[in-house]
Image (cartoon, rainbow, N blue to C red):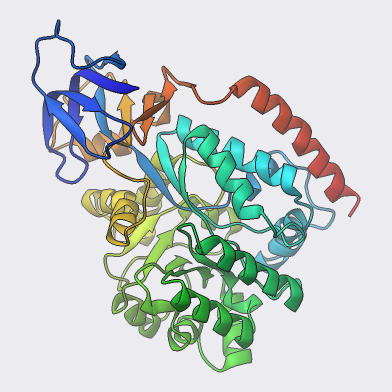
Length: 425
């Protein structure tokens, strides 16, 4: 079905130019068509008309780094041992959780993540997955759940040596099989859980499939300390020497504890950095600072939530003390994920992905102050309609593609099952 957005205040996401338009959106065409028509006229049959009077219409959002597998951790009981540092947070929380994931839990985690993304205005997710005892078919499971809701994706499996060489090999094999017919990335956990052989094989696979590496980088000083001790070089130097930074599709996540040489290596490479401010604050690992990293910085959620407007605000406010960030650079980071996807030819983020905002402001909203409204006014509660690939997946704040109530009831059951599995670990 085609969609006609009447009386829309359209905001071009690149230029922030405002215009009053009627917009024709087709599911079979990534381009959108601006039309001038008699409001009593009929554009074509099989067209749903949405009155956008008083509403803002712009490109929908996208998540630069997510962990859908963590979705059922919300409200989870505390671990049996209290973590004393970041490495123990991984051991006692996330590496315990991912070992208990089966395909039903993976499916439900991906489904509720996709629902959260849709409600918050995001139609594309770059995801980083881990389930060491359910590696096979994990790509398909996540993809089907995302697509059921209507969310496009760029997936990877987090290969690591932490669970042994056999599971590491399974991760690379599953990745290669997926990349034969689908877009995606070669996922790695972090330098400190990767031996030289696994890292080398992953980079070889990256070249073979014309892909990129998606990896956590210097999230905590432990990563740097282990790299220097085991390999005689800092993390970014190790990854650069291995060839990770050579691909414009590579994503380096976090990048907190870097020296000037590492920042220079990243700045002079085509690789991208994904900032995840709230996760860093939650884990008390430090604050992101984009100084010396260049312009290829985008924002993610790191599985904390699926609300990119919230991530934008967090990056901006935290950055007032710890980063050199302005209105313009904050917005650029927020939208850079589209540039990353477009420059690398990834599908699913075309112009027919739109968000409609019902934002009644007490002050004027203009091209000149729109970023200020994003930072201090507009939030996900203003998202009323979401169009993904020309398809209306959220109508008046309700998801149209799945039964939200039944999905949430089932996810609660599956979450309790997961928590019970973990408690008996």
